[in-house]
Image 1 (cartoon, rainbow, N blue to C red):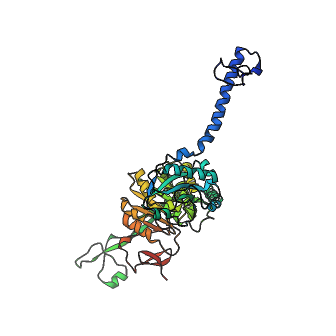
Image 2 (image 1 turned 30 degrees about the horizontal axis):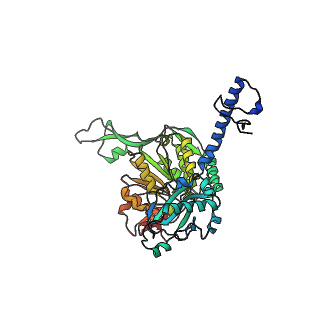
Image 3 (image 1 turned 120 degrees about the vertical axis):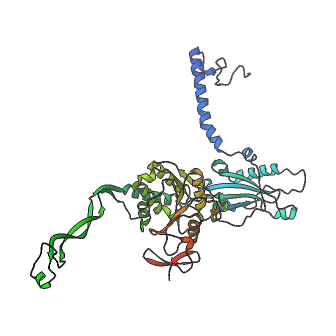
Length: 485
């Protein structure tokens, strides 16, 4: 029997097309209904399946990547980097044990295919070899192709110009894992910060005016004259005129009071909050007690152990709504979980802006920045974040950097690019100030705040100078202050 005699049941958008024979005789209205139902089903399937297909990274897409030239790729062991080597000019893996170190594809930040540009024969087809290598990777680890967040790169080594050095170069794939901290730790910190912020309360109280007086003695003439004889004076004798003996005028002392000082006669804000997560809250007190520029931008480090100080920053915004109105806040996490080996000076990233005067919006940006990364390596991209702030708000007259004393400034080489003062509130100081922050504030003309104290004239400070900070004596040596032994 031919197909025309026994058609296969189909659905079509064409009203004149063949309908399933199993329906028997149907009306025109039923035909329209079935036709529209078919369209609906087709649309639903397209909507469901298309996103799933779009998430998968195809080899054809990867073949469109433009190779990035490099010298000789280093495959030295490095935390968070997995190497899957292949022989020179071949597409078979020689060692795939590193895949066991990948918890899941969600931890992958970037995958790089590495090869050398050198080839022996003019007929050699490097793109075809690259395609085969991508195909082998997909066979052994298909999950990498299903994660749309993974960045892909093709690195072409160009130093080797002969077979022997080229064959000794690394070939294959380098997989870079994210610097993701355990989510439970981040959420714990955010939960603690939220508890502290929710505990904040304040009220206004009236401070009555207090006046201090200064007592002044005033000599006033009585209109009488005193005898020249001491005996007569002791007897209380007085005269109406000076006489021929030029008697002395009599005076009496009157006490007048003048206002020396007025205080009070205003509303004052008193506040309270749960301080159990803080060793001290001098940062909050320093922020609330000082006057700040209206064109200031605040740049805050939210990596690692900075969560208590991030909480104090948000408490400051609750206490000082006028600071919140400035709407210039930047949070940085040193790379958004970027692997340390991929971080480049001035291009580390992880910088997020809150250009808003809405408290909840600022808090949302801060907590999201915390979730996206907590730093990885110890040095932080303080100057990169400050430069980004100045680029975003060119009329900023000063940057207030809330920084971690325990972390060096990663990008101090960019100091020459800072054209505005950068003041630093240095958190976590115990017995030594990190010299990088002395350099930063000195070079830009900013102020340095340590333990609720402003360190002044740092440019003029020399070895041996002493200063009392936090009730203890500190001495300046080798570019920084530390507690005197």
